[in-house]
Length: 515
Image (cartoon, rainbow, N blue to C red):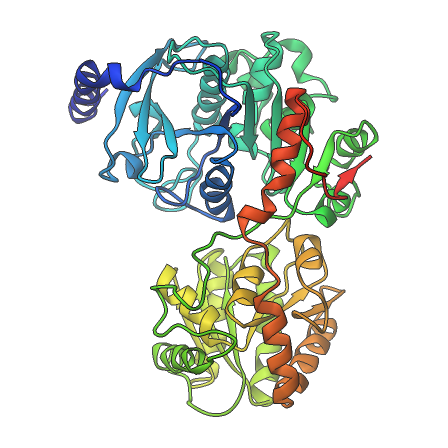
């Protein structure tokens, strides 16, 4: 352990000596259930993608209903956030997993964050998953097994934190070993595992079994084994009491070979057992065009001046011609999944039809380069910024007429709902959450095949609507009122929590349940 890291952790420990008493948790009798929400991202503190947004929004939406707390690794970015941290527990090492401490952060809105403090694993520059050059950390299996084991230890009250969850909700492959370790130890606390993107398995060699203390029976085809490797994601699916994913259509798609990423067999079994459910994500209430401080000027269905002001800002920002043609936005990771190559192919036809395109995002180097080249071929008509900025993205949603989202698959998607709230009509492929959140010809435009021809058909329908202002206005108004805020979208989770806890809850569960 380096001197600087040791000094930081010692300071946290010293602080906890003076502040430990106020943060002790008394079990007591409370109608709220204790939920531990385990994740690798939290948008307020560290975010790579949509998982960070959901991990910040869903627990907050549930906070009035449950005593829900978030567990996340103590990354460098979080320790540098300026939010006070108090050390409240300690956990021993196990197999190759080092010992760690548990820190607590209290956010201003009352949400409590628990941190797995392990400097040698988490205090690094880069993202939660990769170094500054985008290369996966070679010890990711250790880093995220430590997260899963910490969750299991907290559920067993091993950290003596005086707060013990009644249910553990793990999210995506980095947290997937939480239900697995709990099952291997015979712990009876109910577990829920949410798949946000099935494509990311969290694979490591079978030879890592001793390092992670995985029992021999867990290396079978029915549990963790995946084509000669260990899959963290498959472990979460195999051992959790219930599995959810982030839209109804995606829950159905992943049971098929085309979308199942090699796990369609085990997922089909979960459906047959009644243990797989799809719930559509919501969006947080900051996506309000009248009051969003990121925007150049707010607007509403009654007053559209602000939308034009944001459009003019986007034109200047991306060096686009100021004319009467429709403005298309791409706010996306520039990766194959998102169909960026298809957008590159249709871009010239959009320009020829009088459209302009503004692009922001980063991703696979070859697709970044391809998008930049497209922009260079059409100065004044296509502007491309490699990178991401929240303010620019929100202004693009607010200023654009249409959002291009031709995803090959999309578990849920948030961008299409952000666009709808800001009066930008999404043009998207009919898959996953896009199919569940866009009503074709009413709140956006859907196309079926991942081909240029199918994509362009939807673009042409959109441009035809643009030529009819009354129809465009009607669709914008409908779109702006369609996406659910989390306060509405959270109720199915609340109901499922009660079901897993065996408690009575009167709210009706929407028909997303797969039986």
